[in-house]
Structure formats: structure tokens, C-alpha cells
Length: 431
Ligand code: PLP
Image (cartoon, rainbow, N blue to C red; front, side, top):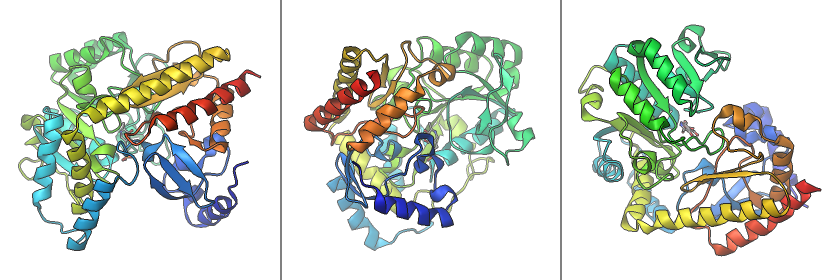
């Protein structure tokens, strides 16, 4: 049904020049065993490929496009900014304006620094935490993804608290050894780790709403425990809100769950679809960053005027009309409720997990609380669902370990179409 002839040719060509034909692994569709559509343009809730197929997009560039693709106001602001020059490597008024805007949404970010990717934000936040505490060990949760820097690309071993082993060739063993991994949502594991080693730990880094093993909310008490143990042991609590910032709520997970982290990382939406991310937090910690303090961090394109312009335009729209968040969340809930009903009608066991405008359909009959639960889901059902939908123009993340996203540009008709096809896909699975 779906014609991907031109994409197939483009993919073959790309593979000669780019490893796996892509610039980020998940785009290769290896986990779903097919050819990725090569995208030519996008508008609102839709993306279009080079074979002229049209899709309703629930990937949204992996989260950033909360206003929908090519929002006219964001595009106009870029068109106005570009003729003034694309990079100066010098301070601009725009950067302070954006910092103020971010702080209005997230008052815990008293000072912040702009970088070019989420990876850079989390990597730099860790350096700051280590420099500030004078300690080396960090704690991360199994199934949380914080980008691809060495300290954070670490696999969990077995057992409650394991010293990490590298998740990729090229990550030095010595670096990975400083990363302790424990299961997400496991309050007892956190408490016993800190009882044993709390005074050696520089920081906990956490996705306060996990999105990189599919959408997994924190259980009650989990984030509170992280706050308590880090406070008690003078460790730094880092909320990686690269994905869930502006999605869990207007003020991210920290506003939704009323927890104040020491440092926060933002990305995706904060750059309005351009390469931009941010880390920041208490002025006491952030004033340790160079040049006001000794902890070095820098970037040629940091605070790039074009990226900052896209971020500013996006956040300005969200600030001007705060009902956008509620509207996007309501649309997401309508879709999720629809999936639940349709799956039940066809007798397909699913857990549709949602926080704000992030959601995942897990093919399982029990709630997914951690990475083991996510791994136990029925991958055959996921594959059938994914391919059935893609064939019919519904574009979901090509892996069962990912969140999907909603935008303000998705309207009732998009949801109706999506649910109609989801119902057919559940029927197919039930056959
Ligand atoms: N942190 C989280 C929670 C993410 O979801 C991601 C990317 O998806 C990152 C960090 C890394 O961001 P980037 O891909 O911009 O380097």
C-alpha cells in the first residue's frame, strides 16, 4: 500500500556516506525492520515524505514541535532574524530575553547556560555537580536516557545497585565505574544505596517523567525520596527535563509533582526545533560555572541567535496563551482514552500511559513502572501495530521504548482518523 520507492533509493545512497544511512540511530528503522520514509517537509500535524506520502505525526521531531510543524509565527521570526546573520560568537540581547522567559516557566532555574543539545546539557550539569561537590560518583536509573556522553552511556548490571559497565565500545571502563545504576521507581534501592554510599555521591540524574523506555510516570514518593536523600547527603539532584519539560506541565515535571531540583536540563521545545538546550538551577551552584566560577563549560554556537529566536518565539506563544498546554493535554487524553476503549473492545491487553502530552501504548496487561516491565511487553503486537499504522499514514515512534507526542496543531479530525486506524490495528493484532 505505502509506496516508499524513492525513500528506499535515498536510503541505499545515504548508507554509502552516513553510518546506517542516518545521523541518529533510531531514525534507521532497524528496530522495526523496514525503510524509513525520507521526509521532505512538514506542516501542522503532518509530515510528508519524498514519495509524496502524508502522515499524521506523533513523533514531532522526538518532542520539540509542541506547536506543530512550521508554526507560522515561529517561521516568520526566523525569516526576520536570518538576514541579520546566523552566528556572532558574542553576547546578544536575545539570550537574556530567553533566559528570563525560561525562568518565568521554571522559577527554579535562577541562572542558566545555553548549549546546543540535550547531551551537552546533561553532560555539563554533571560536571557542575561533580565540581560543586568534589565527588565523582553519580546515580542514574536503568532505562533513563540522558544523551550519549561517556558517564551517561552506561548499562545496568544485575542486582539492586550495580557499578556500571560501558554500554558502548569507546566508553572507558574507568568513566563508567563512576556511574551507579539502579531501577527506576525503586524507592528502597535509592534509600539503601544512599545509606551505604551517600557521602560519595555527587548527583542523582533522573528523568522525572521517564520517556526513553516509553512514557513511565514516577510512582508516588519516588521523586520525594530523591529530594530527601540528596538533601541529607549534600548531593545534587538533577532533573533531566529535556523531554518532559513543557510537556508534563507548563513548568515541567518539577511543577507537576512540586519538587525543587538543584539543577534542571531542558532541550527539544526550548529550542523550538533548532539545536538548543539549557542547563541551570540554583544561583549558588550555577555561579560556579566559568567565567564566574572555576567549572569550565563553553561553546562556539552556544546561544546561537537563530536557535534562540526559534526558542523565544515558541515560548512566547506558550506564555501568551497558557491554555495551549491544557488543550494539548486534553487532546492527548482523548486519544489515549480512545486507544484504551478500542483495545478493550478487541481484547488486546494494553497499558496506555500518559503524562501531559507524552504517551505510549504498552502491549501488556500490567502497568509499566521500570525498564524490566517495558522489556516484558509484547513486541510482536507492537510491530503489527506500528506497521499497520505507518502503512495507513500514522507516524509513531519506531520503537516500543519511546514516547509519542501531541501538538497544538493536532485537531479533532486527526484524532478521529488516528483512532479509526488504531481500532483496525487492534483487530489485526487480535486475529
Ligand atoms: N535527555 C533526555 C531525557 C532525552 O530524551 C534526550 C534525547 O532524546 C537527551 C537527554 C539528549 O538530547 P539530545 O538528543 O538533544 O542530545
